[in-house]
Amino acid sequence: MRIDILTLFPEMCNAVINESIIGRAQKKCAIEVFCHQIRDYANDKHNRVDDTVYGPGMGMLMMAEPIAVCFEALCEELSDRPRLVYMSPQGKALTQQKAEELSKFKNLTVLCGHYEGVDERFIEEFVDEEISIGDYVLTGGELPALVLVDAVIRMVPGVLSDDICFKEESHYNGFLEYPQYTKPAVWRGKEVPEVLLSGHHENIEKWRREQSRLRTKLKRPDLFEKLNLPENQEKELFH
Image (cartoon, rainbow, N blue to C red; front, side, top):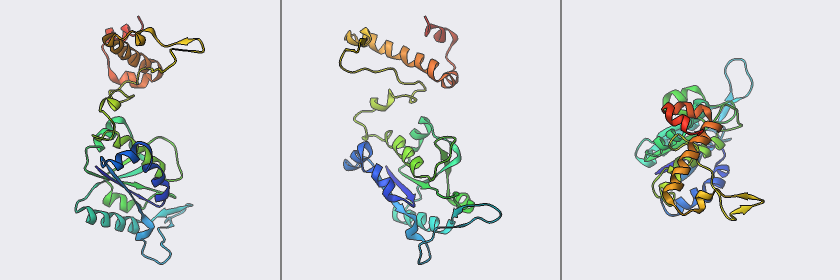
């Protein structure tokens, strides 16, 4: 899978994509991630990419043409049109299911807005979907883009050591992840649950499933309600 990030701050993005899991995945060629400086495609000597908004209002807006030229150059390089996602507070919320869906694309491009956003004409002409990471405002789209990239690449085969690494994580199957513990077995008087020390794999798996459902019910009742579990299974969680 290849992901391209269109941004005014490529250094900011490179600081993240070259580290940790994303960096290691690139080194072993499981994925490719590239950043493109939109200013390089501006059509004046000052590399200007923004201008004032038509009508009353404050702030600057990113112009359509530099972004369009940048994206078209990328399409030409790839000999194909990648799916273009614009990180926007007006987009649909990023979910684990959406991350998994996007991971199936061979080429994915993520646009980072800035200032007051992007000229609506570019969005109408080029953007395939808008995605939000939450109902709050940030100074730019770089942080949301990096969140999206991190969530997506974890779903790509070969990025993690084993699929089980993400299939048991919170939200993958709709439930939150079960509690986990490491050494020592007793820390400041608090003991690791006895079942985890038993060596009985079947009992451990049963305990983890129960804890996963119980934790979801208690911590995220909104998620739990969406699962529509049979009433008898829901009652069993508290007995």
